[in-house]
Image (cartoon, rainbow, N blue to C red; front, side):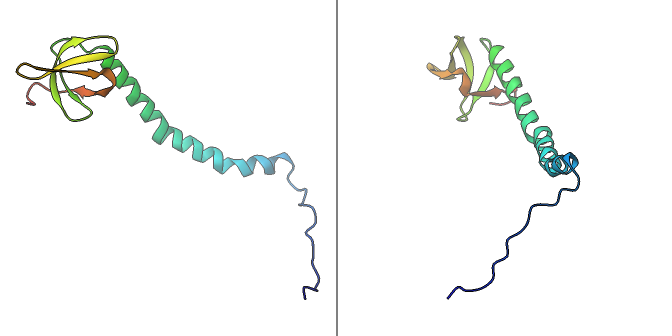
Length: 107
């Protein structure tokens, strides 16, 4: 049924030595460098800016949460922030849910 000749490949050619191995990894190294400068580095920079902004939040700042709620900071604690979102309405949020500061004109 399966009677035929089968040919095995011999060992790989030995030309090039170490340079052939390095040249094989060069495209992977290049792709990593491109990803680092286009994706990873900007994300790290943005995360650093967000962390600095959270550390500098103070009472009276106007902020917006990641859920889209606009509020005025009433109290700041190490892990949470109390926001005034309407007259006589205060809500406590985790600091990580503050998306950013907003301008005075936004209401």
